Image 1 (cartoon, rainbow, N blue to C red):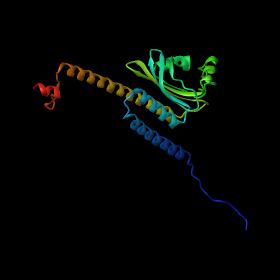
Image 2: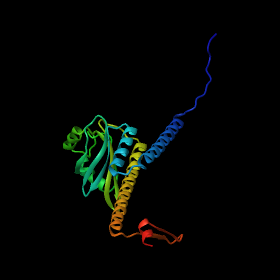
Image 3: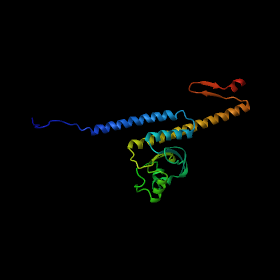
Image 4: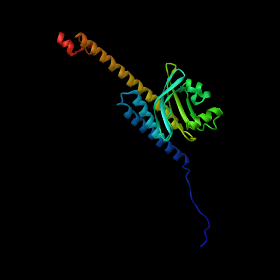
Length: 230
């Protein structure tokens, strides 16, 4: 009637659980990027692209603010953004607004990660007060370099201190690049439509026509104006 001993075994599953969590987060990231591509593809206005990308990322990461900024020299311009429970940052300002000590990192195209503005030694007391008034306690900032020049920035920020995971930092970088590509695509398409419209107006006004020849296939095509003349 007395318990003499207990025999048993155990398996350490900490590493397995960690790998399962990494795999789960990786799948979520890929699923989000597919959804982002599907959402941006049909858009034809650069501002709509910026707004959609910011909203989707902001909701996905559950941050209080997300936005895309165009960079002109050392100034940024935010036209559209996502916000939740905080005031908007739409407008123009210097890149050093988010910490003068970080300006060089931005200009080099580095990703800046801040978990707590109030304890980060890269900020001055004046900057901490300014950031607090804007309800920014933590943020990720990505600048995009094209041809050796900073052309845009994408970032998310939160009203309270937050530890960002490597997966979240990588996702912000991915979204920044995809947003840039989509914005440039819509601008190129808009410019092409304008050129085609100007050509059509000129042809209509002059009574002329146009034709194209694809040398690789020897295919020739011409418009109605060309047909009427020949």
